[in-house]
Image (cartoon, rainbow, N blue to C red; front, side, top):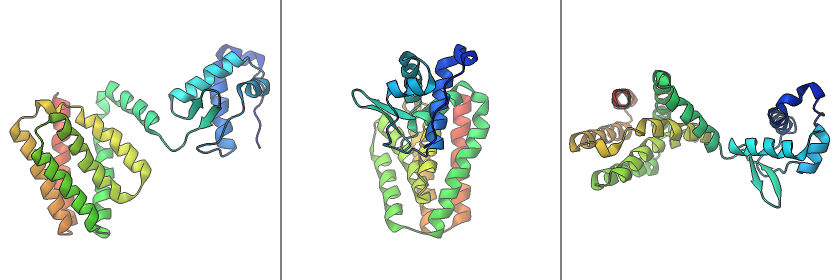
Length: 231
């Protein structure tokens, strides 16, 4: 196992950051995955030649980013399965930098277009029925919060076709970013427009018409982008 090196005296002005960086590298070097336990605070302090207070601070930093989970009385455990915390930090960064919206929109298009192509190549009737059910629920609900959740579910449902968990997690965050335009402000015309466009995309998928499905998706997402920019 690769061990941790003591922190040099000249580096002590940024101890907590250096320790957290060292722990990240320790996790990578030792190929630790979800469930693996890190050495105890006492052992880490000894390895790095720093106080346990500094180690504790560094561990809390890693916990705040979702890299580890701290269980009181048990210790710190690696967490590689759930990247939602990290992705939510990314969402916050995007929200602070609205000028990035064009790049974010392009990324969303790439992900959802990849899903469309996957659905066309390997049609799964059950998957299409699931999307159909989501659209039906959108038509029936009058709750704006529920409508927003179902809208997200539809686009998440498209990405599920890729069977790529990272795509799915990333899309969740991107769709939420665009969905932050409050659906409570959507009038009946806008709600019906969203439902109609979802239905048209689904029908194109059922007909295995990739070009039409991609065109409809692009038009639908373009409206989401414009709506986001204008608010």
